[in-house]
Image (cartoon, rainbow, N blue to C red):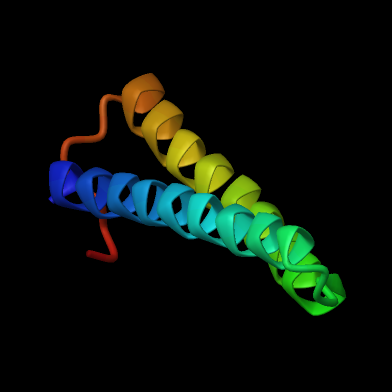
Length: 76
C-alpha cells in the first residue's frame, strides 16, 4: 500500500512537471507572437505553486514512512 501511495504521489509530481513545461512553452509562444500573456503567466504561477505542494506532500509521506518503518499507509 505504501508503495502504491508513493507511486501515485510520484506520478502527480511528474504530471506537474509536464504541465509546467507545457505552460512555459505557451507563455513563450505568446511572447513571440506579441500576444497578452498575463493569464497564461498566472496559470504558470499556479502550476508552480501546486508543484511545490505535490513535491512537499510526496517528500513528507516518503520521509514519514521511512522514519517510522511504515509498510502500509492506513488510509489507502
